[in-house]
Length: 197
Image (cartoon, rainbow, N blue to C red; front, side, top):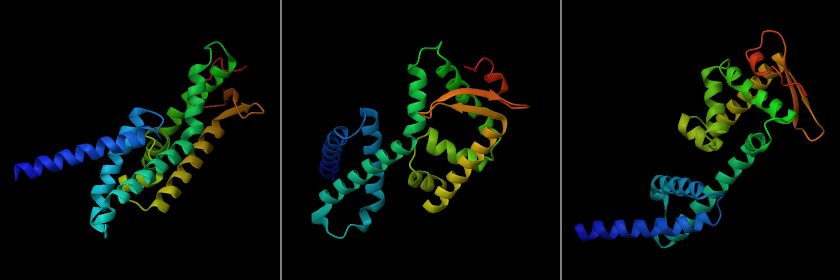
């Protein structure tokens, strides 16, 4: 029995090393590759019972891996716009008007998120901040994927309404934020001081 356990652990480690090499060549970073491989092993453990042809085990594992990579890349592309904006903000010189406006807008989101219901906050946090796919977020919350998609869409709409109800946002022709001005009793009014271009 110890020999069988040792053999199983060895096979598992060898498979993990092969999958990690496979994923690393397709992922943006080593950490992303590690996360994807971890998700693959979870999916394998959940789906192995449905495998009909044991001869196709390796092909099935690689198909699960390719699908997980695709899910990960799809999630990144959906949230990439937000993260690209944050990355741009960090890379800009702190004295530029663009940085000030984007910084103000980013600062506005935190208090406005606090005005959303717990359900809406949770949906946005899982997808936009934790960078889960909508499928992963649905699984985590125990809801259907279509239900999760609707929940996220509603939450984004409510956040947008809150933002536009208290802030004026000016954008340039490229869609970059140029100016953010709080109007009236806005929770992010203190963030907007000096944000005008």
